[in-house]
Length: 622
Image (tube, rainbow, N blue to C red; front, top):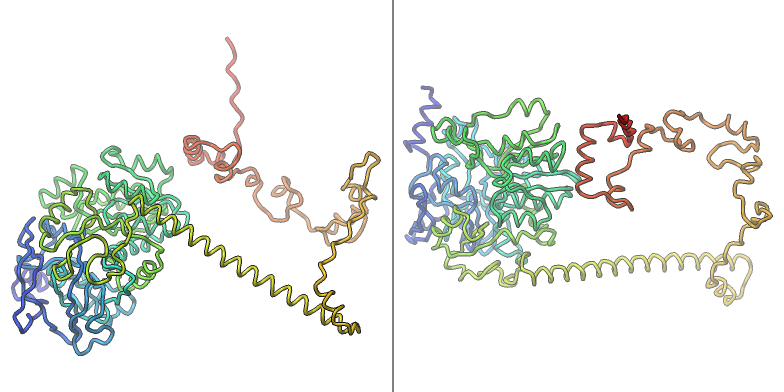
């Protein structure tokens, strides 16, 4: 066995493994925390309250934490190197209680969001803002053996990611506090701020990896919090269509409410075929946001049961098969080990770009916070349940079984106050009335606020127009006053009258020369007689032959449909009819006709050019 393999085995068996456990508070105080005890066994236990262990540490008094979908991997013991007694959780916000001597950017009393990813801020990857690839914060030898390199540490997510105590507790120690804490304004409630730690930044990373842009068709596998937040960002970036794939009706309803289309894979079992029906040619972007837990094919189900692979890749396979040629695939769901039957041939032959990776929180969270403050996005629909921290075992069971339409559970420690809905607690009392977008009354309120904002913007623009008009009039009047003075008009009243006089209308053009005896006007009379100059040509000659010779030659093949057009464009583009014209013209086609036409366009390039083939000759009558 190689040295690296021996070290990895020792670490898995917890032999001489480096610990990142904070030293306990000198006072011997304890706190309540959600603790892992085994498969589907989490409990709320008394644990030592952490104290500042390093000079760059901060101790955060947690006011809100949540259960992440990836925490269910721990709940089912899918993640290696979990130990009984480990504190879970990597999404939490709170108030700084104490800091180390080298912490300069936060101070006790500051309200902060804690990054799920622990970065040092000094290594090469942190300097490149690729914080989840930090070289410093994870010393796991087993990860180095599995992946060839180590990635950044994570809060509460096994010893393979550093062995740090998590945030589903009353207190947490945060290493490298200056880089891993984000100061929060009072206008952002805990219910929104806790989503910055992971969900919103992960979803943004998904669309960033896929390079989603305006006009794209995007397909997303998974309608959990990450998948729905990804759909929200895709709409925000201007995607033309967003298609979400899941089987939970409540989650599909959220995707529909965001303005997207949905596929229920229990009803349409062949997702790739259904997507080909909805989008001939395939989506431009496919995003996998479900992860490796969900095996739908019998091959991966058997192989996982026999430990022949660790990760099922049915959803990733569907992404690659369904994606358009030269499309982009983003893997943001959790994949941690190995998988078989990966469609590498489809990836290579179709020219796909496939990218994956953990979120870069510290790179994106300032942008996300600005959009929350400016109300450019509304993620309130992601938090569906609020419970006491003491009820965490019940919350995990409900979340795992997808009961009661649960999407995300927010947990509140006792010192944060009794849970009372979004934004509750003693952190941001001014924001306790945060609306939920799916409440009918609040939808009306949102629409009213939007109408008022539009009216204010219209008034502001009108004020700008009026001010510009007034400035132009003042400038014109001053010029007229100056002209009157230079002409010797010493009477200021005359100059004032001149400056305020309305502009005189232009004299009507004499059209008698082109009027016919019947009273009509022949606007081509001068052109026919050869006395009218061609405004598009450089010549002033009245001889049409000389004028034509002096003009630049045109290509009759490319422009014969429009001889006056100087831009060289293929002749067939003159005949093509745009999708927008078909959708908005007087003879607008139906959705069914549009799908049939797009299918014909895909298989018949001549048809796509706009050329209609002549109908076949009728069969001769017998």
